[in-house]
Image (tube, rainbow, N blue to C red):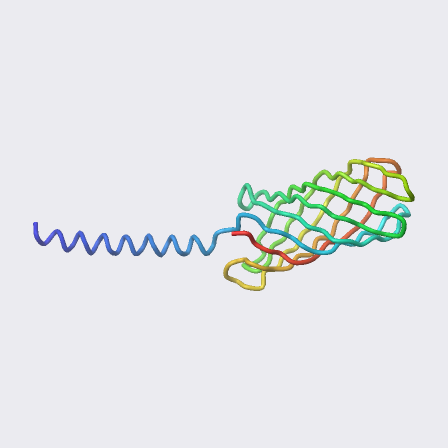
Length: 174
């Protein structure tokens, strides 16, 4: 009976050490709770609206690992005699290219509030994007860069279409 106690203690020690090591590696591989995207946006109208530029901010979460990411964002675009605010919700399919790079393809609805030459319009639209994320450190993803080209179609007056690109800083929220 006395010989069983040391064997039991040694076994518990090794099992606890193994569980601790697995917990540490699991924590270092964990995805952040959310990713904030801060950057700039540029768009060029395909139906004669011209080019516009402005800031953009978005928050991205992962409800289903490796299958679905949701991104909610707001963009303000400015051009001569025109201001456009848009809010979108994108449903993205992610692919991990390496431990530093990710690629996502997404689509979703958009609400557009535009003011041009004193007239204000509100319309719904659709958006399709390809999102490339680069995380410089191969460990935890804390800060990174993104580029997101996209296509937008407005269902409102004029059925405007545009090609655009967003890009900027990624900040992971643990």
